[in-house]
Length: 305
Ligand SMILES: [Fe+2]
Image (cartoon, rainbow, N blue to C red):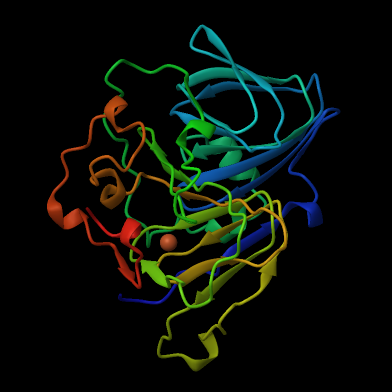
């Protein structure tokens, strides 16, 4: 690992913040990273969220207790129920809520209006030059369209406590872990870092500690203390490149975690069989040296395949 963090982590706890977009039936909080925006909306029945034109795909994550949404794009409409992921094609799209609840959307940097509205837009005023440039991967084999994935089918009832569920599009990759019903053991943590990309960790239930350690540089006055602060949910943290991190759920109830990477992580994408929808999207033709941007105490599923 080289270098020091270019910025501090952004920690957004939505219950403690005013929404960036306030409508009669929807409140929306926007937090950005260098290459993406995490958009969380609390909706009432009848709420309509319209997008005139997004240049790239975006994702819609409806958690287990989330609302039912009608999502229209590319001339098609699908019903997205609780516990689902939907990939929305570029262009115009409309989401209409038919029940109450909270859900999340992930947009790329190409949706410049959302990036500008983010609560932490000032944090990224320098354009985040420490990150590898965003890279649009090849178009899906059967063309751009709505892609819908109910998530319950990817749960192994007798499986490990940590069950990654990874999906990708042309411009991002998400890991929607099976929600945790037991707490992470303190002897099995996985502190690690990413050299040149950020990680967003979106948590919609439970209570979380995202342990973080920032590298030291030559200037003592710029050193940042370790962060072991607890976060309420719903919340998102944007973990900068080079910051050592590991997350631990500390609440009493079920807890949810979704990790977000934009552009997609090549090390995950190249693990055959690891990305659930890998057959829908061709891999880019990138050199092998583009691997190995992550280091630290990795668990088996985090290691390059
Ligand atoms: Fe990470």
